[in-house]
Image 1 (cartoon, rainbow, N blue to C red):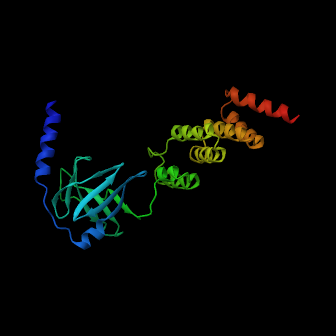
Image 2 (image 1 turned 90 degrees about the vertical axis):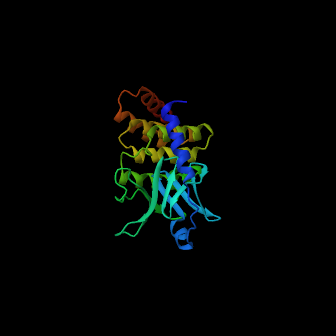
Image 3 (image 1 turned 180 degrees about the vertical axis):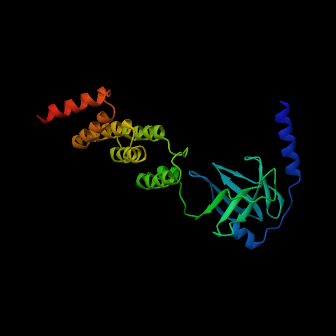
Length: 232
């Protein structure tokens, strides 16, 4: 084992051994239970069972190390956290305790409604219109968010297309057009989905846009010519 790994393991062991058997009040548990937005597409669920705190995060359940009434250590983040309320908005947060200045309060992971759904949840439920709405809202807040991934959505659309789920594929490609209107590739993909679904008019319209944006798209040009010949 490398020295750094060994040191980390020792630190974790020491922290775990310092875990206190804190009796959380019903008020504290009610106030802090719920969902916290780790990022635009990732939620941490906090809940209690038998007076123990648990985190459900990224498909796994974690019991944090309890250091005090409102101080915990989460090994997955390798940091200390606490629950805070913003003095102006009154919104609840699960926040990082600064290693440099523990008295400094930050507002990191916002508590959201219990019924809050991430874009990934909407995709899983095949509710592509709601996924599009959520992603457009994220883009309005942060156009550089890592959640906005043109290639990922394009691949998702083609998986649906291969399964002949034409309506769903079209919705995903339409979403990509809304998110990345400056990309010729998103129009090309949407045109292909329309073409395979049998809608040659919409296919023509989108391939035309793709070719106008990228005159070197020979595939789009050939398909446009073929559709024109078929309409003669």
